[in-house]
Image (cartoon, rainbow, N blue to C red):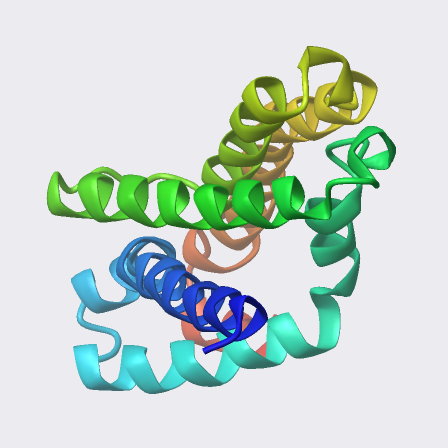
Length: 181
């Protein structure tokens, strides 16, 4: 078997392992509250997750994929040795998959994005050099990890406050729910 084919097979195996980790951890994070509140069953959650995870990746994942693929590290210094990038990305996929397995087994809700970004940065620092990491881009990514929960929490607060004020806290919540929804 050619080396190229071996790398493709390894990338597929490691990629499926990583995808399993996404399913075990991120989907559980997204669907846990709906299943826990008994709004939907586990089977329904899996069907919904399969559809929307695929649709989200297919329709809106291009920008994030581009950042992960070529926005985190500078590869020009290894253009004469592309195998380093291949080995490093394979190592990053496997490392991220292993970490997601460990975190899922321990019941820790972790981000697959944090995981793969950290794995790629780790590979780049060791395999290419600290200067190969695009630290400005990493700073932007990490700041989005800080801003995202604050923003999501603020939006959730405003939405629930509105629902509580306009619907739940009124004398006729059902009538108001029909009116506003």
